[in-house]
Image (cartoon, one colour):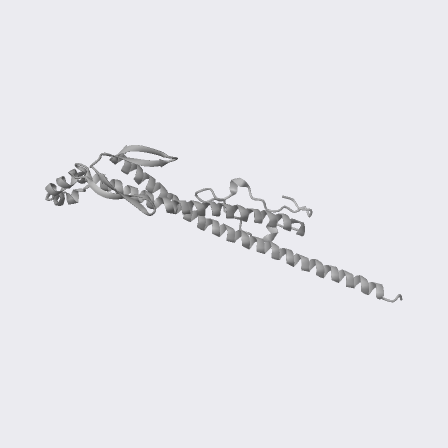
Length: 232
């Protein structure tokens, strides 16, 4: 970018822009104002450009905050559903043996008779109809469960597949939640950097105004004193 004075102003090449792992660009750090403005004519466009960058960062921050809120509501539901599927897996015939590890096989073997009787029994429980209303249910041992996929779609899954799917979704949601927090922290840093940059450019403009005013007053006083001098 060129200015009326003919000097070049720093302009970042898009290929050289540093981004975080999710592609959010890093804000430029204004160490030397003269790299961005060389005259007072450059101040307003530069301040406007910096303010636009802050607005974009704030827009991304707002979207991420809404996404975090959605994940905070979604994660407990996924975890609760996964816990339920794991419990149902232990209730089905042979489920407890499949869910056990090698370390507690001996302990489970001593309780085989009790487990077999529990596995064959229907489970008496309650389920939520709405926030304040529950109903009783009897759940026999089962090898499949139905999962809501969204958009009023429900599919039947074998318990093993349902558990694997829910674990995958839980891990993905937890990773997304961590990434959102990292991105929010990154965005806050970039907004602060741009606010500092705006303050530096503004202060530079104030200093230039004072210099111009001082120079104008100096010229005015010099010309006035010259005019008042008596002719020899």
